[in-house]
Length: 132
Image (cartoon, rainbow, N blue to C red):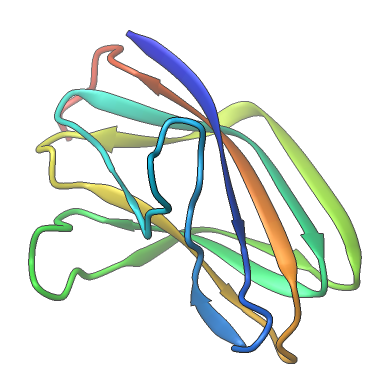
């Protein structure tokens, strides 16, 4: 199984930090995070950030089912001034779904609340997952 799709999100323009509401043609509604099924790898190939200055964090949790998941930052990107930043990976960021409880989310922070936008291209695959 392989699926390549794009997720999109935007800041709300009124707060200086938050979690992106992620939208995609694969989702019926916007989501706060993407949960990985057991045996699935998520590969992030491309990131686009546009609009006002913003710090964007890709975060991961081992167990999204607990009442207060512990999120750790896997990757940070800075859009230092208004404009656009496009980052394509020759080697993707890879996140493993080992138990089916893992999840990723994307957060933002800004010094001044304004509109910023993201697009991430993600491939989901059931290629063999190593047990660490």
